[in-house]
Length: 133
Ligand SMILES: [Fe+2]
Ligand SMILES: [Fe+2]
Image 1: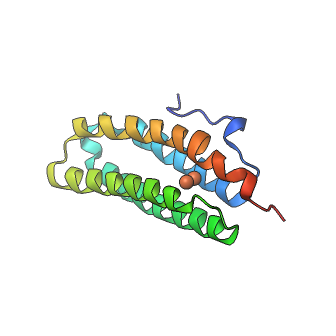
Image 2: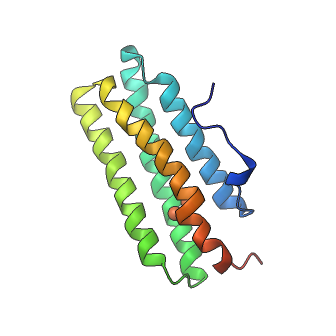
Image 3: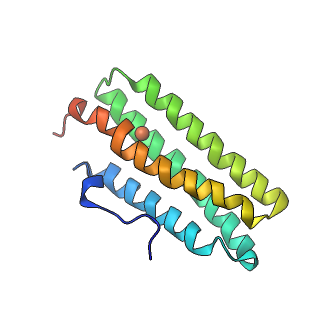
């Protein structure tokens, strides 16, 4: 069973952003599926790396879109994005150093909660400002 079950509600009607949010949820699901297996340490590290890269890509795309649409609270989005990126890289570095799968429990819970908060609260605030043309 998926850790994050994708809901129609998660879609904004912005194709690029929707695809990226969907991919992000899938990466968290993959991490969840693998996290109990110490023998998967290399794959887990690889996956955490993919999450870091994906977050950078998504947040950059979002910030560009918000800038183009003159979103007045872009600064707040950027601050939130920076927090989540540094959390992800911290997890990656710690996992690389200690290979402790137990440490990942907090991370994927955080990722899931943040994924939901990000898409449903933080990001929803910019929707009225986006010109869909
Ligand atoms: Fe987003
Ligand atoms: Fe965002």
